[in-house]
Image (cartoon, rainbow, N blue to C red; front, side, top):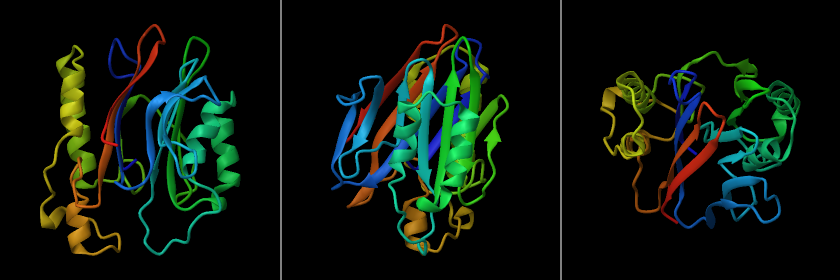
Length: 241
């Protein structure tokens, strides 16, 4: 997962609207979003290499997503970052307690940004933790963006997606296709707006779009996750497997 935009308690009908693109090598085996046979309470895509996921939901009103923190010098982690999402969805641990547990285990994983939440009749919490920042954050209502750096780092595609989501929320109503249009933007950032994460200019440029296309790597799925005012949770995934 390489870009996430979400509106938390900013829409009158939807306490959560979350948009996400998962970027990965095309050759990596992947399963589309579905009910997991071994954990039927989970609905998510699945990485068929390590068995985890990048984005998923579970009743009642639990969700989680992860992005990599881009650092070409970082060593591989002991565990797959996809476990961070799956383990939260399998559990009934509170948002804050789970992030606290992951902060203790932070060194077991390569760089990650973890977003977890629970929005239902009993609980209302969305939290964020990165093992490259080391601070547990319980989020206030707002519109947020996350790519391969810390939450709300002002990369061009983070700012662009947040702005587009804000305009849709302010317009009112709810049209799924409008959210997917945000995720389908293939415009590259201007050279002056590129971050420097140590991967070189050409790769920075290719990865600067919201929707990425290269010969071997790119956006494999676009997803719209919602929780409505009646606490119904849904995940709509558009995949390229």
